[in-house]
Image (cartoon, rainbow, N blue to C red; front, top):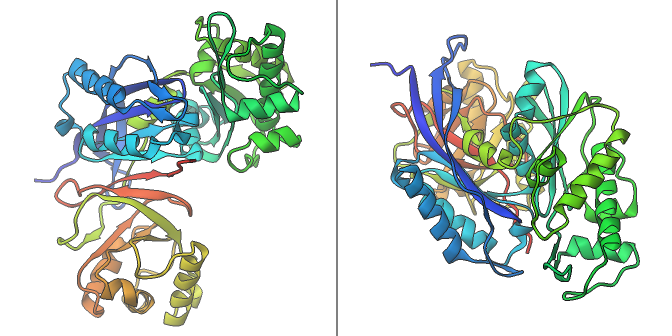
Length: 475
């Protein structure tokens, strides 16, 4: 019996610089009637549970309290009435300054292993910007109203920025601007000074240490300086030396003029009129951003989701679905975790064994990787015409390019943007010595520098769940 639709239960877990929380979503997947390949698309996303928001528990400035954090999320599963075994997909993300903690990588792996069947462990400022754009509603709004929207998710340690146009995130960036880079006690004594705050203090000629009382006028100066840097970045003019020091990623690419700006994250709750006292500079930073907003050349709009944008993005938008015509050796083991994506630029007009081998060799060299040492995903845009002689030539070229991987029985993963995976997989098995450890997927939009997790196939092995992500732990 043909399956035309099915549901997945997804979780999003966010461990941030200031707060931690989760959401559960139901994802409805349907076959696209307009698609010639009848591929499955995510038709609908419904949030079924929004958990409590807690202060991220820390043992000290450098260490996450694993016991408290895992206990909190176990309680949230119970409150939601959900068994981790029933969760089929989702993402655990660790954001902002928290990704710099000594045990950040350990905690995100523990949480993802306990969260469900195919829940990716992720961190990375560009990834955060993209999923915040999705979770806040900015990406969908850009398509609905045909606008270019810059979304900025301001948390405790970082501001993750994305530009969305026509329903696609086209550029992302991140800068160290956040509400909890300074923490204070009730007497305005400094409890915490994160490195970006030390950088700004030095820039302003200040020399405060932990335990010092800091006058409100100096907190105002620090917050205003952070706000000025943020405005520089989101207007495409991060030219100051200070902005350069606070940038975590490359600058945004402004290929379109910005029609609207929108803010999400914890600080955005305060930007749009919310209240709260958090013993940090979040409220002051929000006020300073509001005071500088008239410098923006386009209006600021309020998004659908603010503080929950990232966790909603992780739970409802982190999953991609491959095309319905992949090829899989049934001896492969899933999930495949943390597979780096290496883009291979094949010119199909120059298709030859020598051309393909040289291009694959160059792609490995760009990543300082040695063919045959580890599993990678080779990604091709449009490498070959779908005719048997051409596909056979391409298949033999793959065999020639990957001798060590084949000898070492390392999974060969080939991913294509176009609908050709089934043809390539079948011809490779028929016409080459590569008979096992082969996976070919298609209709996925990837870029170099991505990492992918590939889950167990669904719907009678027709489609594969794929989480596209970045992995960055700044020790």
